[in-house]
Amino acid sequence: LYTAPDSCEGRCGEPFSEEDECHCHPECEGHRNCCEDYERHCGPDGFSSSRDSITDQELLELSEQLYGVDHNKARPSDIAINPQHRAGPDETGDKQDRSPQPLYKYVNEELFSKPTYASFIKLLDNYQRATGREEEVTAEELREQERFLEEVMKTELMKKLFAFLQGKNRYSSEQEFVQDLKEMWFGLYSRGDGERDSSGFEHVFSGEVKKGKVSGFHNWIRFYLLEKQGVVNYFSHNFDGPWDTYPDVLGLQFSWDGFYKEVGSAFIGCSPEFEFGLYSLCFLARPGRA
Image (cartoon, rainbow, N blue to C red; front, top):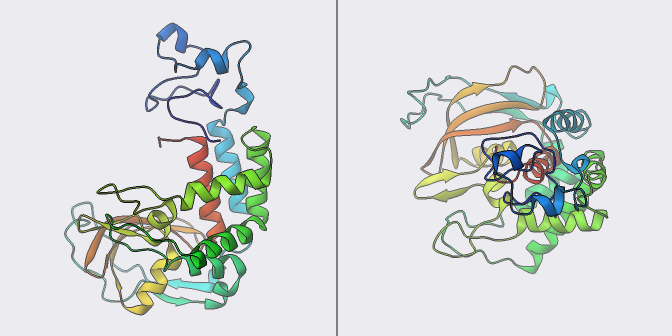
């Protein structure tokens, strides 16, 4: 349903990018670097039309629209953070705690009773963070995944994303979209030793530990809850977005139960559906590349 990096399905007419392993723009035939199925999809009688490819401009416009309809995001009065030390490039890797205070001074926890937040938080304890250990998924955890998907799909943000993707002939029904989201985010794959030990959701939102380092872990709610419990220790930040409202972006250094994250980035104050929708869009529009 989403495009493969070595296929022209849904990619006809897209701009040239050096990162692509093969190409689908009209000049690729002259350069002899088209994907094998270029003719089948992009030829005069092809399956895909150029209007189904997603341009950089469309990505820009749609992501701004999703930002605009994030009705569940935090208001400026809902969160107070204390970024303290700003780390230089030579300081991010040295594991020094240069900020004695926690990152979060205050969070209005009434946010967490909103349906998308509440169903999101229930998912966070469903994972073993060590890679190489097979995940066991219980019936209760499957129900929690279903509930979260139900709640996010009720939001204007996810409805707007679906309408866009449906207009690009990626999905014929909302049911098909939800089924793909489930596989995309909760389908298990291996990060080590061949065990089905990881998922997109675990990596991005919950966080993992691989080879003694924190991997993924890009969610502000997860960070706040673990910092409150005393298992996450904030060290410093190396980037603070220029915004005076939420979501804001922070690049940060921290330790999670003694495991270090050299540079982690997070949207601070956005709703779970904003990140979930935006990252899904990126994965569907630009698989395998920046």
